[in-house]
Length: 459
Picture: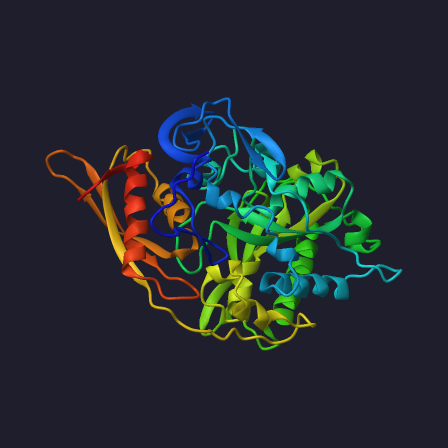
């Protein structure tokens, strides 16, 4: 392949500027507005290989394995570059420190008779999963928004990048485990700002009980199961006694975890919510810096998941949390992009021997932001999603892009055509950007909008 360099570096991986070409930058697959129906889902596809489109027979190499592409593929080069980074396993990284604190909480408080930890930890499971693992095994409805390619990254119609670490729960239960923790990177198409990134890290904890374990040998004839109507308080198959004990155990566990992370004086509250794989379900919120902050989601596992996984005689609870959200609050990290930084000034602040060491991130410097606007007429307003533009912007600008916001939607009164206007804010974490550099990035972005048929750029 012949490589023709751009006039400036446009891709910033780990904040180390790379001079690359548009040919290599878009060598893989990008989402588009051509579409087909598949079940309850609408999929979008556009192929790019070098400077021309791929055929459907072409494949994509991910984590040392080749996967065929098809009309559902929407994974981008920017996302591919994050596979295998495993920040949760990187020593002295803030994501790893938070993970250690939570893991040590369970190791310290939940031990067996021999002194060994009760919870097994899985932190190296591949993020490439089947759609069945990610959705069907955990009762995600066919029309749930998370299935749509506007929200998730598809490799093909059979495989995707996991959108939650919950996707491994069914398989681990089926393997015979009753208590386990899963940690890993997850992928979701999302907006662009200081708190959102298309790759982040989750921690899921699951605990199952049989009748003797839950009721601790009670002689009062307590039963796990019942045959009643499902309501807002419990699943129809569960007994009131089982749900009450599970709920108490779950909430006591999580309130103790919150106290461990945020201190004994932290205020917290439970908020009823909905998850496809648990019922009843709650979110735990804590008061932090005068505001209520969601920390995690939790609930009683849907019995159908246990039955399908070969554990029909057991009941259980589960919860999941985002590690970046906790790290940003606990360490006062202002921008989610910093987690991907290779800058020694950032990483050295987390080089501690004890994960419980109090750390408050100190800004090395504050470089000014540069913002430019772009507007374009949409080719297909009904099929278009702003996440299409956000993904494209990250592919072109990499981690130079700090924030993208839609600032105007206009419908022409005569033609009925729809136009979107976005403001793209750029900021380098380690140096000043020049207007000339950003002009070149913005020009590339305008070209890509038209090349990928998102729309026609307004001059």
